[in-house]
Every structure is written in C-alpha cells, then in structure tokens.
Image: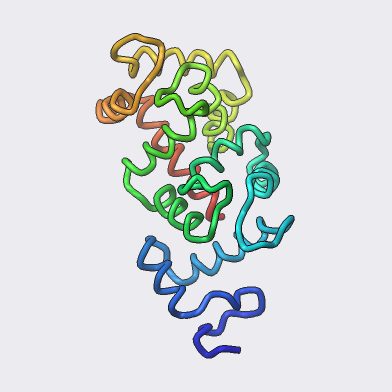
Length: 206
C-alpha cells in the first residue's frame, strides 16, 4: 500500500495525503469525518460503482436512511449536484454536507430554499413549503415534530402561518430576500426551522 494513504484500510485506498489535505481545506471536516463520509459515499455508489453518485443511487440510499419517498429525496440530490452534471462527485458531496452540517445559518438557509424550491422558479409556494416541512418535521427529534409530519392539517396550519409571516409582498410565494428577512426577524417558526436544519445536517453524518 502506498505510504501516502495514512493507514486507511481496504476500501479507502483512493484517498491519499494530497486528497485528504484538499478535502480538509475545502470543508470543515476533520480526518475521521472525511474517512466516515468516504465510506458513506462508497455505500451509495453501489449500483454503477463508477466513482460518482447518480440520482437513483442517491434516492435509493437516502430514502431508506431517512424513511422518505424517492421524490422527496430527489430534491436533495439537485442541491448536492452543484455543477448540474447529473451526478455527484466526492468533492460536491463533502462540500455540500460541510455547509449543511457545519456551515453558517446562511448556508443552512440556502439549503432550505433550494431544496424547497422544487420547480426551480426562484420562490417557494405553499405546496413546496408543506413538502419541505414534512421532511424537516419527519426527521425532527421531538414527538411534536413527528406529530406535525404525520398530519396534513398540522403542516397546512404551520405553512399558512409561515406564509403570513414571510410572504411580504403577499403574492403567494416566498423569494430568497423574503426568506432571509423572515429568518432575521426570528419568529418561533423561523427559529425552529433553522434548528431542524441543524438536525437535518447531523442526520447525514450519523
């Protein structure tokens, strides 16, 4: 084994010291976290084994891990596929997870927005917001979160309240500027959504 491989066991032979330094420089992960994420990445890349993650590989893996349907997970794939090339390489994978799990509130807000904006219109309507709330509350740790995820009526109530708070121009959708302003105002719903985004990030690292 190449001495540059810093003692990684079989299955991690592609990560040498130069690679490791690059990933640590581009993210906020340490050595053990990058090793863990490479193992996770290799578990996902099982159907084609070509060194990248396709949309169906991503959906198959995370729909089982998070107990979500493929359509909900497909939205996440779009955010990870930074260059829009139709697949995720390891750099895209770790950089996106670094922003989600260890980044700023602005990073998490961006992840929230671009995941929720399922049609790519540049704004979030109520239906898109309800879909995003399902994912977040489904992955939440409290019984109240899970009860909201399980109830269409409860999610509709929360989404209606958020739309009233955040949709400043009352056009029926929330754009990036409105979302940022809503988060800055710090209503209970805004704070809880950002808390749930932190929980969401931690689930990817588990």
